[in-house]
Length: 126
Image (cartoon, rainbow, N blue to C red; front, side, top):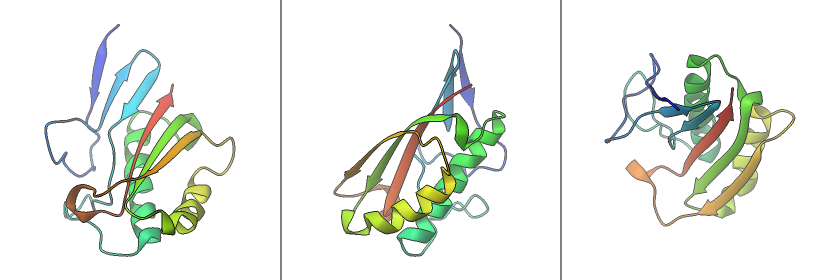
């Protein structure tokens, strides 16, 4: 099976030695996304709702680059620095994945890159 590296136009550059996504067969593995603003490369300042929205927009850029949508996502992993903000994150998440929700794991972590409050990674099916 061929491994295809995904580097979408318009996305913020990767902040380290990784790619935005990797396709293997009919699966797309998206790297964890934080609330990086593509135009500036800086972390979006704001509350958990604003950061969650930006994270999902970053994921959408990767999916669209491959001709996919949120409906193609089969698994999501959410990393949060404070689960006390779970309801607010979940509200924004629920608007992005409007139906046929993917499987999901949400965990609290001690810290995220650049001081982000939330990071998400997804697996999508072509």
